[in-house]
Every structure is written in structure tokens, then in C-alpha cells.
Length: 222
Image (cartoon, rainbow, N blue to C red):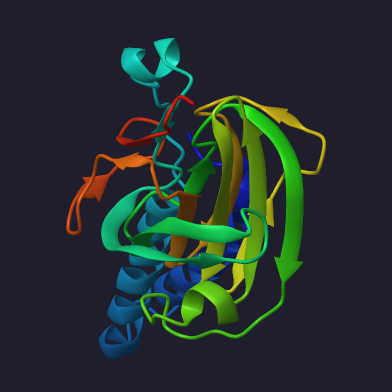
């Protein structure tokens, strides 16, 4: 199915594809004009359907039965695992797991662990390449802090040089459940997950992860 988070884009891109197709058919006798227009309209239509797809996902049984487990909030590739100070919500040295999304990945985002939203901010920011080390702080982003029975985590929807639209359906005070949809990053982007330093990170750089289905970390039970 297609995500309602991209409804406005789907309508605009679909109409553009139809217009291009109509013009191409109308000028079918002019091959150098009609063939590229018809081909581009079909490609645009297929890209729209592919990009805004929203497949059903199942949280792994281990994560359902163990509330300390985090699943990936986004599809993509793990590009960084770093220890650094986190001044916004955890207020201490923490581990950051960064996931890069290409335009071909599913861009609907999922809650990584059940908890209560205690912190939310939106930063207009810049539009650096999402893989840039400074993108985590400087780029346009939504920042969500969750309180869980096993401590606090922070995750960030971060747009890049191509992706310039965020959808975040979440607010302070919400109780959220692991695997639930909460928003979307459009046209290539990055997701950061920040956890306490004693968290067991269960992925490595280069791993392909799937939102709601790939277990990425386990919080320590204190």
C-alpha cells in the first residue's frame, strides 16, 4: 500500500506523469518528443509508487517479549556507530547509531522501542549531505526523546541534500509502541538513534537494516 504521509506528493507526481503521457501521446507523430515523454511519464509513475510504498512489518518475537530491545526505526545501511556527548535529552556521553537511507529505501519511520515521548523539537537547519559527520547536528531534523523502563533514548529524523521534507506525527506525552509508524523522511535521508553507553549494540557498520524488523540494540537492565 501507499503511505498517507506522501499523499500530496503522490497527487502532484501522478498528475505530472499523466500530463507528460498525454502530451507524448498527442505528439506521437514526433518521435523524438513523444517517446522520451512517454518513457519519462512511466518512469515517474513507477518511482512514485515505489518510493511511497508502505509495506506491513512484524516486530520480531524477541522484541515483543523483551521491552529492553530496540528495533531499527528506518530502512537503510548502518554508516556510523560512535560514542559522543549528547546535550539535548540524555545529557551525557552516549552511543550514536546512524542509518543512511537511499531514495530506493522505504522512507516510512517506525518507533524503535515502547515508551513515553518526553522530548520533541524541530530544527529547521541546513541541507548537508546526510552522511556528513556534522549533519547529525546541523541539518533540518526532528528530535524525539523517549522514556522507557530501561532508560532514555533519543532518535532523529534528519534530511539531506535531496530530502527536504519531514513528516512527524508525534508529540510530548504520547505513549508509543515499538514498531508503530510515526512519520516519514522524503527522498533520501538519515536516522540517528542515541542510547546510553552501556547499551549492547547488535549491528555493525555496513549492515542493512529494516524498520520494525531488525533488532539493533538492547538496553541494560539496571
